[in-house]
Length: 285
Length: 162
Ligand SMILES: Cc1cc2nc3c(=O)[nH]c(=O)nc-3n(C[C@H](O)[C@H](O)[C@H](O)COP(=O)(O)OP(=O)(O)OC[C@H]3O[C@@H](n4cnc5c(N)ncnc54)[C@H](O)[C@@H]3O)c2cc1C
Ligand code: FES
Ligand code: FES
Image (cartoon, rainbow over all chains, first blue to last red; front, side):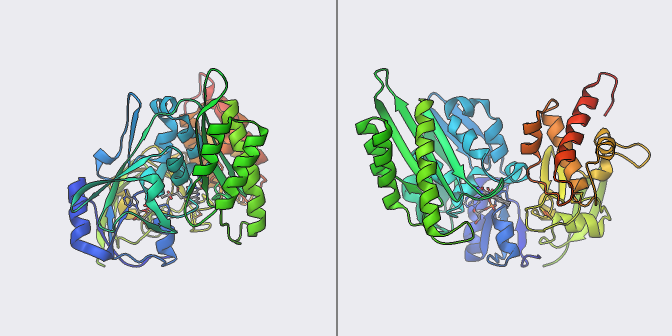
């Protein structure tokens, strides 16, 4: 399993990395943790001639929480997300999700930027980012651009990011209230057969003041379920409304047969996982 | 692509190798530096046999180019103990039958070492979750978990020096 040949570059700043990417053009790719890219390169599904390693850019490695504003640098690893106390307070669903990604070794290397930029429908962070209504910051030759996570994913491995842009930061608002990331997988270290991210806020009188639902690996992009979210918010959370919300979300999914099972099985698993995830989020709300 | 000089700090020693950027860390360690403790099980990031410690992280050295590890501190099983003076974890694996063929063992122990650095008092569940990236086709894991828990106890004794 030897990858194709490439030239290796290690820029020390974002402008330097953006300039390199512009100069080298199509033949260049950035590498973050490498835990999606290197396996793809070993299979020669990717054969970049230049790799631009972002590990030396310290400004991309930080977690900043100020008031309700949360900003995470692209090179922050899953392990760093898990151990951040300020993030645990601001958005506990991040740790819950990160702990369900891969295994410890992968989590030390895999970054949030790589996970959301990759565009693999199996990645767990993209649906979570849609659930949080996060914004991605992109830096390119023409400067900075913001794209909503809910607008970012176009098809498998196709995103709104231009080839010459680097995703530098993920931003979202702190979320109090009930949360849950539920994931059905064959074993630890596996991508989801079906997974769901749910945020629910309960008011003092028991009504639901905010609901957000998104799904992982059930279509060729992550899916934000706007109708299911609106339904839970308007009808409140109870067995009947959960069933209705799940039914609505299931109309959006387009699972395909693969080694995780036939589409029919995935539909079945998805409905169960989403039901349980909503129930758990509500029980914590 | 031409070879470049890569300098790694392995087990406290600064070592250099000439390698193409595409050479994986595991290949440079094993074939050039002759550090053959870390094994190649799957070469596809799944088994953990190639696990080494790098700057306080457990990493799969088959999923990293050696050039990415330039200048980093790497610890392999060779850096933990010697045949004359086994590390507590090595002693414990021996004592509790934490290995059979031994193929997964260097990765398993290197990973367990980092786990105990971060969590000196793990529960059984912590150990199982913490070594979930390391596969063993022989032992059924039971005795590996026992060995790690016993090593944690041993290391927590006041008189022991790791
Ligand atoms: C055994 C195994 C199991 C796994 N299981 C899971 C799982 O259950 N769930 C899950 O979500 N993931 C899983 N992964 C993938 C893992 O989380 C990856 O680390 C992650 O998908 C990519 O992050 P990375 O930092 O490694 O990115 P890389 O592999 O370095 O990059 C991935 C892609 O994104 C691009 N990219 C990276 N960073 C940026 C940036 N800042 N700006 C623009 N483009 C960028 C790269 O060019 C590349 O195309 C698994 C991986 C392995 C090896
Ligand atoms: S050889 Fe590296 S994970 Fe199997
Ligand atoms: S002892 Fe044989 S693979 Fe673990």
